[in-house]
Length: 256
Image 1 (cartoon, rainbow, N blue to C red):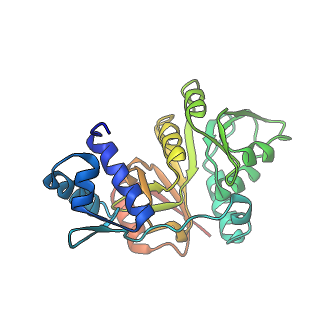
Image 2: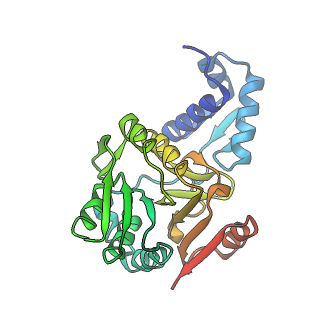
C-alpha cells in the first residue's frame, strides 16, 4: 500500500483502535511501512488529544463513544432534554437568516421550533428536518443530494459534499455523537466525518447542540472544540468542561 500522509495515517490508527480495541507499535509500523519512532510519535499526539490511551507496546481505546442507535429511536431518548435544547437553539435563529441544520435527533427538535419563522432558508442533509419544515410557509428548505445513511436518515458522501460547496449560509447548527476537550468533535462513521467537515466550513458561526451524555467521549476526530462559536447544552453537563469551553471564548447556553 502507498504510505499515507500523517493526518490520514493517524485517522487510520484511530479506526484500527476502534475496530480492534488495541494496536501495537510493531503492527502499525509494518502496516504503514514507517518506522516505529514515527508510530510512537503518532500515538503520543493522539493520546495528548484524548483520542486513545497509550499502553505498553502500543495503545488502547480511551473513553470510546458507543455506537448510537438509529435517529428515530434517539428521538424518544431524553426527549424533554432535547426539547429544551432545541427550543433554546431556535432562539439563536432570526427571521431572514440562511442556516444549515445538520442531521441528528436534537437538531430535529430545533426544526420544530422554526416552523413559524418568516423568510428563513434552511439547508439540510437530514430527511427528518426537511419533513419537519415541509409545511412551514415562511421557510425555504434546500435538501442536499448524497448517499442516504438509513440509520440517520441523512445524506452523506461525495455528492452531498459537492452540493454543500454550492451554497453559503449565515450559521451552521449541528449535533455531534461525542465531544471532548482534547479530541474535539468526533464521529465514528467515516463517510459522515467527511461530510461534517464540509458542513462546518460553510459559515463562520458554528452552533453545536449536545446534551450531557455526549461529553467526554471520543470517536474518530473531525474538528477541534475551538471551531465552535456557541454550544447549547443542558443543565446536567459537566460544569468544569463548560468553564473550560467558556475560557476558550465559546458562548455556552445552558437550556432550562
